[in-house]
Length: 100
Image 1 (cartoon, one colour):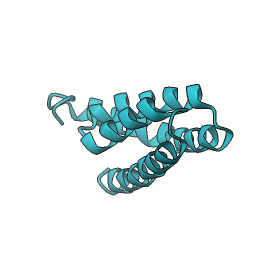
Image 2 (tube, rainbow, N blue to C red):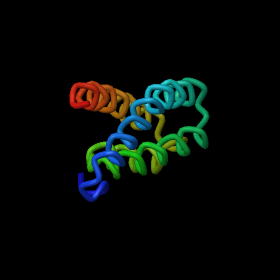
Image 3 (tube, helix red, strand yellow):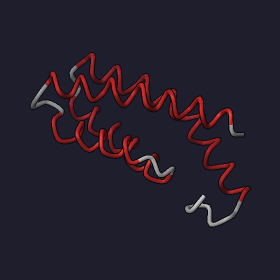
Image 4 (cartoon, rainbow, N blue to C red):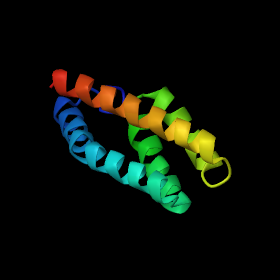
């Protein structure tokens, strides 16, 4: 609500865009992890950081930062954090859908 500055139409459009794009991005980030495409994983982590920062979701932002930091350097930590990110985002999507 802070980012929309009370503009309900803008807020709804923003949430709709995130609801539309995020499931596709979750598939892509999982595919990047599976293929060990570290650069692609970093790019997807950046997407999640920027979009969920707008939604005031600090846990997603923190996990995305961790993924960007460890992608390609620590496969175990990257895998753990990527799965965490996917789970949290799936829960947020459910919550957003129930609020529109």
